[in-house]
Length: 167
Length: 147
Length: 136
Image (cartoon, rainbow over all chains, first blue to last red; front, side, top):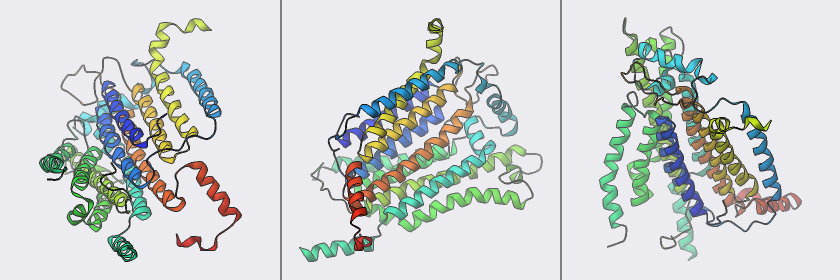
């Protein structure tokens, strides 16, 4: 975050996504690691590089002091750490999250659906509405980006003809 | 011989296995890690790699923007259409029991999950390619030697 | 009060503290930097730390990935956080793409992507409204 060259910032964020995908594998979340590696280290880096090709390549020197953001961040972090005292310890099987719906999905999947991958079964069958909503969100984002940015070939060639006439 | 020669040869060899891997991930999402989203992103990456190495104009010859936009809508229609089909058969919305034959409830689930994940993969792949095409359709102001 | 900070407490909670540290770094980047692309990178950092928090809550020691094997005594990790975070990752990439498209349009309209310069240009426009601004 101290870097001013945006190319290095984008590359480092891609490396960070890859490392977090490795962390997800270590936490037994293979589906999530797959998605994070493909999306974060792949598509996100490509889009940010495309943005940098159309905007600046370096950040301006910071003008105002950074004491106030640092203070806000430290106070918020301290409050959050104080709040984690009540959370269940890491990796214990008695945590409340493992009591109700989680084991029930694992038990019901072999009988009702018959697929080994429980995450796909939950995503596509038990929680199908959420996946429909997510697909609609991706659809809407695609349409919005097309409306904002897409310039058809006719407009571009007219601009190039104008440039050639000026020269 | 321009300095993109190695890139062109390697990407020519890599793009078909990438697409094949995307299809593998899509259909084996039931048995291992994978599913619609991952497969859609990997499939889009194959096309984006082609556009990066050979130029966006060549990608537009292969995949016209109209086809990409049609694919974006087709995936969502496949997904929501399965739900509406269940409604017509008298079950709840997105109830996969409407796709099952008598006595084989699991087959209905399998068929439903196949169609639904297929729709998701198609939409995600088409949206990623469409976003990339929209980003690169603005006139860039850098030359090849600046990098 | 300080006697509760024994080694069991630290071993049981350090995953939350690590994600909070990452979260605060992301928040700091969003708040303190003026460049819009850096703000979006900081937002992605914040998002990824929240994903790590959820996934670490779903882990069980001695368990494995939630893909059913033939072993009847196998302990599986909780699939529910995985499903939620999968959706969240895809929605995150959608919002990042939209944010970057907006940054490109802002650059075309204002000529800069630094936040304070955009603020100055908007103040000037408010004070001296230009009639033919719709043509850009």
